Amino acid sequence: MDMLGKVCFNGWILVCISLYMLAYLYSRWEHSLFRKYGIPGPLPTPFVGISPKYRRTGVALTDKELARKYGDIVGVYMGHRPLLLVSNPDTIKAIMVKEFSRTPNRPMEPLFKAKYEQLLDNLTERVKTGKPIDFKEYVMIKLPSIITHSCGTVQI
Image (cartoon, rainbow, N blue to C red):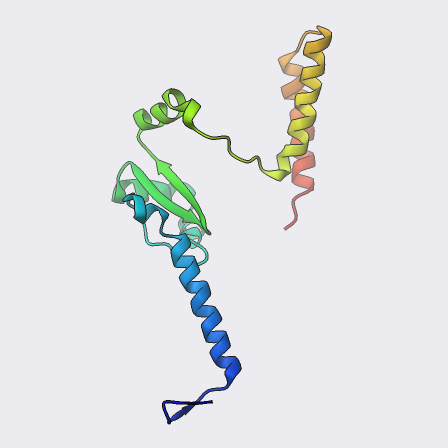
């Protein structure tokens, strides 16, 4: 295909460039949530957010730096997932205690969902039958098996 009379592009090259530009624009659109609400934060890298920065400097140091640079409330992206970093204890208390009823349930990670449901079923059965629930038995004895099972199912 002759473009502008001087450069000759094949059709598949134009398709690849168009698909890349569409993916880039989609990524920028996905990363526009915090900008829309006026929440400060670093400019995310397309497709990965600030994941490379977390990998280079670690989560704790990166979060401290972001809180120092942008303030107590910072909007960041892990991939396309928006995360709100809150570093003021009073704000955290207001969100977690006072506004708890307005906080929607978050989806549980699939690694822990099956074991969590099994543990909940066991506790519910004990409550219905009137058997006493021993904290040590359920946390100190069953928790290692839950962690071992969950770690064993991780696919790397």
